[in-house]
Length: 340
Image (cartoon, rainbow, N blue to C red; front, side):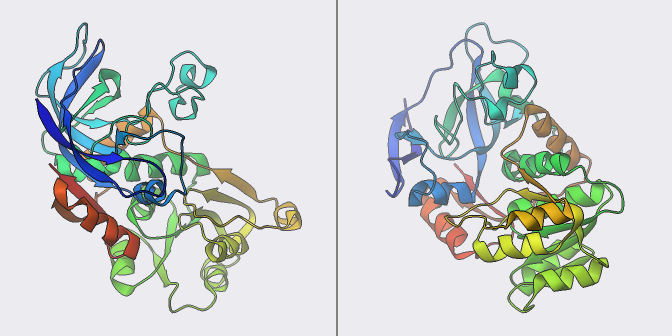
């Protein structure tokens, strides 16, 4: 039996819709009927060649939710028809990182759906049963799907930043991850400042808990504005844009012993003189992906209404190019979701 899937053919090449065979689940795996898959900027990095993991010929998409269609041999702990969110790292299970729960840092991943193995821009996929996080019946699969990356990334980065009650937290970039981070930071007790482009996007950030918003298209010196609002600088800055100008401003707006958390990236490099870090004892942290526990945490936060999944629009699978174009143009408020 055949199905449709959007395939990655290599760096710098457009994706291609293909007809492929429906996969069969092996031991410990399930066949998942995909209900929704969020579109992430990472897909643009793959297409444009900025991100090249040395593999091609697989299905894109890593923000995946669906229902279990069939079980592979010896698969236990999950049932046909169960609604799940997919955790998109499948570590080796033997290294120190996997043993400690940091599967996302495994140097020998067995699979990473949407990055090195088949993901969710398709009608069905095979995934390890352990990676299926149960989703309560009252939570929409279309809404939870983008939280598989945008939400889990926010939870993981938020934990790394060790946000304390009363901390001034700047979210530099008000896209899907940024909106989730703004909400998570508020839940953690932070006072949130969102920096982004456009009144509509910033109004959304404010409605989700940002105490102040700064339009980078209007404000000439966002670092000075943050220092003024906070009375000395931010305790935490999450860098989600990753271009030279935003990285420079993000470092400048930190107070002494502030934490600078890098999440977003581009082709630009971080250019900071060591004295800037030394004199203020700044911590520079990188945050990538998430743990399986982070996936369970975001499902719980969304289910309780503590974090809201913001969906810009839903598109059928064959309109994936339209979604990519909107992402590239920055013409979205929240995530775009593909629904086969």
